[in-house]
Image (cartoon, rainbow, N blue to C red; front, side, top):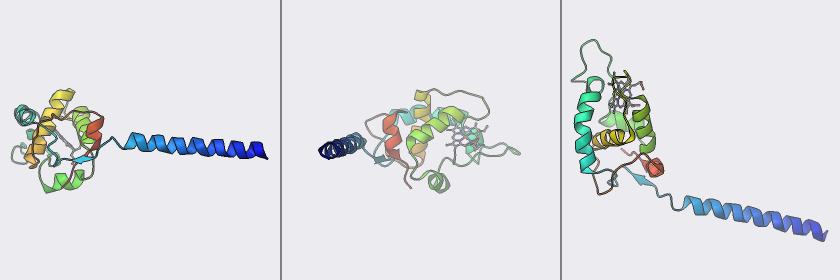
Length: 145
Ligand code: HEC
């Protein structure tokens, strides 16, 4: 009887410790949004010409050649509706691994961050002092309308 009580207490202590550990891990991961100045002006100005060169032929309706099927918008209400509450980490990974989707270029992480910074600027989000990076923090930055 005493032994069983001891085992029970031990198990309860383990559970308490495990949930304390989970809380400790969750607290420092700070949630931010695209309004919290999450890219630099320098990134956006590097990304602009790249976006023009590598993305606009499919994503700027004014520049899509006649007869070519355009990609979905990357600027404006429709883009923000599709992406709201999704993370910048997801957007960065999608762009880096699937765009441009005609194999005309392969982007590395820095080039992708520059282009996504420019896309954020086009959508009216403010720049700030810290560069955007495809890392764990980016998974906690959420796109808002
Ligand atoms: C050859 C045409 C083409 C080029 C060039 C291209 N895209 Fe795309 N893009 C598409 C198409 C088509 C889709 C939708 C289907 C898919 O995912 O393949 C898409 C989807 C996307 C999406 C997801 C949109 C959504 O609402 O889900 C993003 C973001 C995006 N592209 C960004 C870019 C960026 C940034 C570049 C330049 C580095 C780029 N694309 C270059 C054709 C293109």
